[in-house]
Amino acid sequence: MQKKSYAKVNIFLKITGKRDNYHLLASRFVRVHSLFDLISFIKEENKDFTLKGTFACETKKNTIYKAYILLQDKFPHLEKEFKKITVKVEKNIPEFAGLGGGSSNAATFLLMCNEYFKLDLSKDDLCDLAQKIGADVPFFVYEYDSANVSGIGEIVEKFDEKKLDIETFTPKVKCETPAIFKIFSEKFFHLTSKEDSDRLFKMKSLDILKELNIKEANDLYSPAAYLYKELENNKKDFCHFSGSGSTFFKVNNG
Image (cartoon, rainbow, N blue to C red; front, side):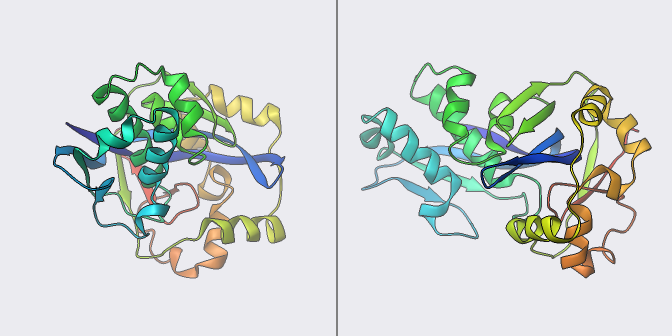
């Protein structure tokens, strides 16, 4: 079994408040069809859960492993079943790049497990698990091409618009999301009103990109550029910024 694990970009990303230690956001997530990892289930006998791929973290910190643990807790018989397969990931999505690669991998893994092991979980059931892994994971579970995302990422509403041809450029800058949020709070803090968020939620992605410049569209660009000054010199003709970076993007069918 093999499935594509797509990247995403944020057409806009606005901070709307805080809940506990988490920032609340309003954002438009759009799937990047030209950039994806490949996840495969390969029939092999193993002593334990086996995950193969080139990752920037140890296995137990990997989002797929976290998803495996959650599934095993819910369905104890899966521990035995997972010893019969190897999970292999061919990585193409850059890490620490604002493209949601790890979140996408976890969501795709959950979707594959649901089908492969006939777990009969609904998308909402899967999202209950996804929220425990990471803020962006629910978007990828729903498999929408375009969606309005709010809360800490757990509220995902499909947005109907034409499929966008998105091209990405990721400079060799490792953006640390916690550090960027810290600088946002210290030096760039402002909140977007519900009225402004709702207006953006109703607009088509192309119209948003035409109306807002890079700083206006993404509240995290200014703190990211403040921390990583080389970002300014690397954006070339890619005039939009995804997540907390470091990826820039442009739309070719606009």
